[in-house]
Length: 266
Length: 274
Image 1 (cartoon, chains in turn purple, yellow):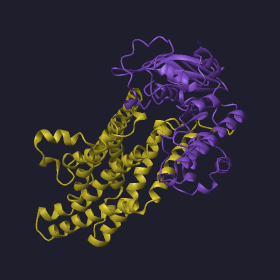
Image 2 (cartoon, chains in turn blue, yellow; image 1 turned 180 degrees about the horizontal axis):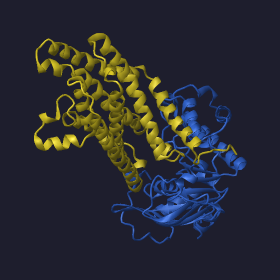
Image 3 (spheres, one colour; image 1 turned 90 degrees about the horizontal axis):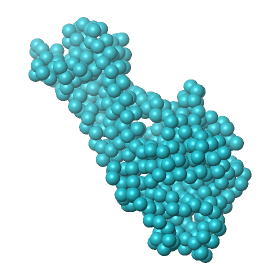
Image 4 (tube, helix red, strand yellow; image 1 turned 90 degrees about the vertical axis):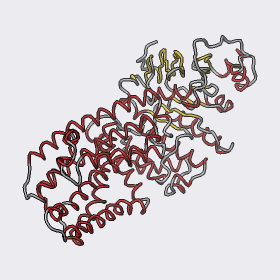
């Protein structure tokens, strides 16, 4: 695998992360082609959050290599951070700043030209106009998600990392967010890596799926191919089969700890 | 393509530092109690020590002379204390808001983050100490600006030391989480007895004097007493303090960067709670 391949948006090569005695990610390798939407599935403690954190450079791998948009994320993350972004309902925007203030600060961090126009455009697209002068701490869960999404789309990222973007949203708002992500990907040609426990969402949005368990990749393919291979009707059934070792997969070996959620969040 | 210019270059770097300063300014102005608090404690301290100084002035001999330096010591100590708190509080705002993850995946560099914290520390000190120093002239006839150019040197030494301590403390909070938050409030107070804020270095036991003389602020307080009590400006004290400052700042920076790296190794940036 060519780690600096410009054709791939993300290349992880033999990625390994150990927290003291707990192996969170166990020699994982994968590539995400540019323009693809890839789902990262796995139960709690599967290593999804740690994998995403390593892709963003928030966590340094114990060994292995990661390339994002052709740049080595361990040595040269500063070269590529302005081309990517991240959204998670579990990471709040500063509560006491208004929506506009938060977007202004992040827009300036990303060095965006014509920032007020960009904020106005995003506010229109994400239905945030009425909320711009309201402190983020006074927004509902759905409104916060839209603001987080606006922050994540502010720099028009080539790579968007999403950690359960529709968690805790009502079905209508969740559907609205998914539609917006579909539009963004189509118009921007962006690459999206989506960690989610919502299987219908993954089936709808993702071209391919990586399934992780106890820090290792146990399978990866398109949703349709996975359904065929496992002989299941839905991706949720595939997920359950893998989670309960009903799929005839070899049990991941050499993993000294599975419960990394308490420490790493998933 | 929107055209983010998140890479290098002094202009881009200044833009990111400006963005962080703007963030802290938004925070500061969003809460009048926070603004008031910046002036409240320095004012209370100034009045308490001001009345004590007035009382000592009524005494005779050395006591009256030493009393003349009390308000100077209080105001200079406040620069050190508020400087460190100002640096660290801005950092803690990110921990409290759980915003560190967003910042760390943005193009903001560690050096730019530190520069913004330094500027905010300076702004907080100016808001807190300048009005109080003017009040000291009005209520107690004590003019800290009478120290002349030496005051500029003292100010620089105290601010840089406050940043060096702030860097170490913030690095520890970054690595250990908010469980280490109390260090922000407590570590600086070690300077109060050791840097000889209210008494000469010779007051300390002989062995402890070596510790005091290894601290940059000691030279500020000794230098201030030399001017106010003996009427002598001691450039040697100023230069020693400045030289020590360079070492402390280098150690603070190295510690912060090492602790940031350690936080990235141990996954501490993902969990910014206790």
